[in-house]
Amino acid sequence: MVDLFTHKDCLILNNSNPPEATISAKNKYSVIAFPHESIEETIKLLQKLDSTHPHAQKLVSSSKLTVEDLTKIYSSEAEHIQICDLNSKNILDQITQALEQYQKYAPITSSENNAEGTTIAKSPSQKRTVTIKNQVEALHKALLAVHSSQSVAEVETLLHSALSKSLDLSWVRVFLHASEHLDEQLERIQGQALFKSTLMLGSRNLGRIVFARAHTKAFSKSEEEALNLITESVALA
Image 1 (cartoon, rainbow, N blue to C red):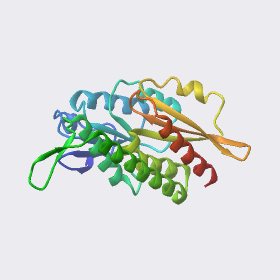
Image 2: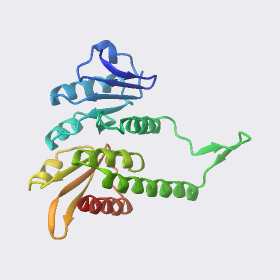
Image 3: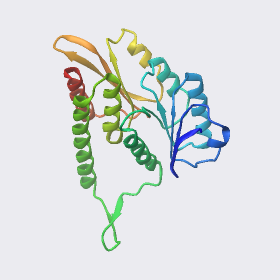
Image 4: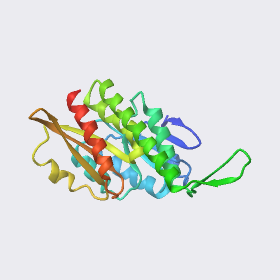
């Protein structure tokens, strides 16, 4: 059996080398997830999916990707890639968020219907209020996730789950005792907006957290402040 789970919008594969027929139908799925087994197979599959499902969210499952692997994955020219963990208890939440992100690439309208079916346009101030509310809720979820995590891998998974929708994150990685070459390695990742925050406990440098977007739109000052607050919580956890 090749696929672990299928839905009219979602396909989860149990390996990164499925039969051609499984993924050949164009634009059949909105989300396709698969486990990372080797960097060569992962990139090969991503390139195939980018040709048959160019707008689908591609979820690569792994809790042990190196910076070099991430560099190669995000330099593969495939689009809409996210890093996830298919073994996480929150995988359904991650898939749901990926489906919601897929909808961003559908025609977008800035209106909604009232009870009578009349279209009511949202004002810019209403949109800002909704955005701020969503960001506050995401920050709250992220802080709860940090304090409920039992491992670094779980911190990464839960933070991504909590923040991916509001901040449009594609992956989160914690680098404990980061080497002096980390910044140089991260610079090789193209087409990504990265925010790097230092894990400090008193005067001790514990490492770095890297938050990434699958596009080049920079993080705003308020977003950076929120991510620095989360980083402080991770250092204390």
